[in-house]
Amino acid sequence: MFITFEGIDGAGKSTQIRRLQRRLEASGLQVVCTREPGGTIIGDEVRRLLLDAGSKTMAHETEVLLYAASRAQLLHEVIRPALASGQVVLCDRYVDASIAYQGAGLGVGIDIVARINAFATRGLRPNCTFLFDLPVPESRQRVQKSRGEVRPDRIEQRDDAYFHCVRDAFLRIAENEPERVVVLDATQPPDVLEQEIWRQITKLTGIS
Ligand SMILES: Nc1ncnc2c1ncn2[C@@H]1O[C@H](COP(=O)(O)OP(=O)(O)OP(=O)(O)O)[C@@H](O)[C@H]1O
Ligand SMILES: Cc1cn([C@H]2C[C@H](O)[C@@H](COP(=O)(O)O)O2)c(=O)[nH]c1=O
Image 1 (cartoon, helix red, strand yellow):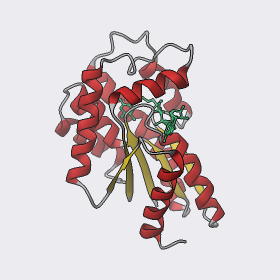
Image 2: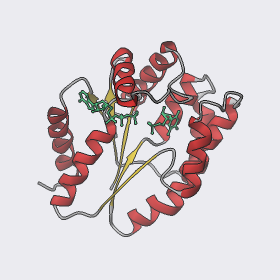
Image 3: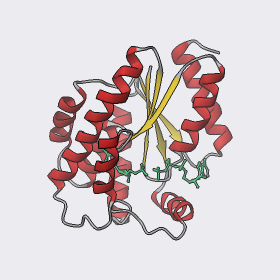
Image 4: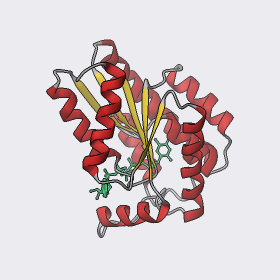
């Protein structure tokens, strides 16, 4: 079982991943939680390059390829081995993020980003994706609150129009793949979201 969590920054993905991990483990399942970009030594190096506010001159093509490279390494070292040994994988962001942030947000193009990622992932797709849908102003407030004094990373520095475009792209993915993507209203309280996610997971897996 490979489950991914998507949405614009600060939408509440990590909070719910932690909660779902606890519930799944309490049901006797082995769970691996990971995130993108990162999750491996190589991926963490790539993450630093991608998010460093100083990497201002990064070409859009480079950005697409670096996210895909981190993803390929994560699949190789973490995700595929975990799935092969029967563990549940919970991943904070995956291919949909590249489609939304780079394909749509940067205007690189959905088809080319999808093709690059089909290569990077060898076509591995999640069984289920939770899309945390949050309006951009709420996202900004949450990110600012959780960052405190730390200055925004290279992606967070982009303007509101960019994040509106990313949010819309996520919603279009969900519209096109309703059998995979569950859209959650991320303005709801954490306990409500946890219940909804658990309801979906029990439906999908048959565990109770
Ligand atoms: N349902 C919620 N309602 C209000 N605040 C929330 C909710 N879920 C999480 N938060 C708060 O919003 C902030 C961001 O949450 P979290 O780190 O879980 O989001 P994220 O989607 O993983 O963020 P990022 O994309 O930046 O990694 C945190 O301060 C968290 O406490
Ligand atoms: C996987 C992926 C991520 N991004 C962006 C989304 C966020 O702004 C950062 C990751 O930071 P987080 O705190 O771990 O959420 O990277 C992206 O633009 N494209 C991607 O494929």
